[in-house]
Image (cartoon, rainbow, N blue to C red; front, side, top):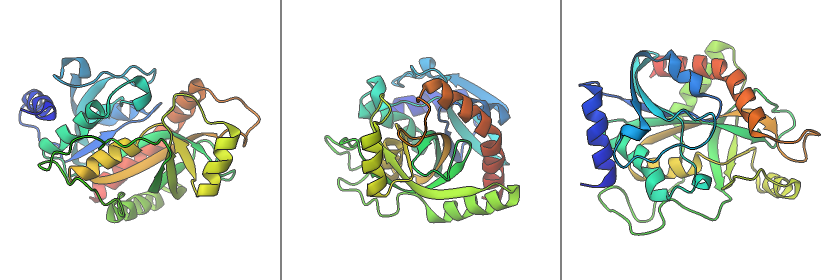
Amino acid sequence: MKDFEISAQYIEQQLNGFKPEVAIVLGSGLADLADQITDPISIPYADIPEFPQSTVVGHTGRLVAGTLGGKNVICMQGRFHYYEGHSFEKIAIPLRSFKALGCESVILTNAAGSLKEDMGPGSIMLITDHINFSGFNPLIGPNDDEIGPRFLDLTQTYDRQIGERVEKAALKSGLTLYRGTYIWVSGPTFETPAEIRAQRTLGADAVGMSTVPEAIVARHCGLKVCAISTITNLAAGLSATNLSHDETLEQGQLAAKRLTTLLKDLLADA
């Protein structure tokens, strides 16, 4: 068996017949969103064979399955980042496991820095496209044709129909929703002001250290992708304050309530 199949088999056994339809990945400061899931089934990452372990403060490190907005979901309460030292093969395991469990789509959330002065901390941005600024790609290496194609088309990485439902849900909840391009950097250092100037020139609206590898892996195995950023700070050079992970967690937690409402309305409309 393949590594993700071993993980999926174990998760399926713990779910006791529960069938998830949508996977959700929670970013920094957003772990409390999982507490809104009803009839939860909790599975620590440490118990799942082949699964990597989360090492970042603010990433709890467990799967939570149950119902949210009337949909059967399975939620990653803590994600894996390239900067933690995880290989891309390990980062791919959760997404491929969700596909093997029968999920049709994944909602990726993250904490991001804003490259636009008018999109300040606390804002919510629907990711409509991305720029890979890292120099890495999670599909480098031998390709498994049973999972997906060698050369993956990313023209429509982020599902337009789901995006339209996000906009509808935002309108329903009275939430201001921004749309934009997310640029991925490897981290763990925050960007320099010069890098931010370059990224703005390239057309990026928000910057972060996650999401893009997961989006690529998800599309490769046939999952539909929706991605949403919670803006936690203005990027380097756009604010007089120094950047910190504590600020990321604090602002992420403040935005979690709004994001929870948005996701519930989104799932209820699916």
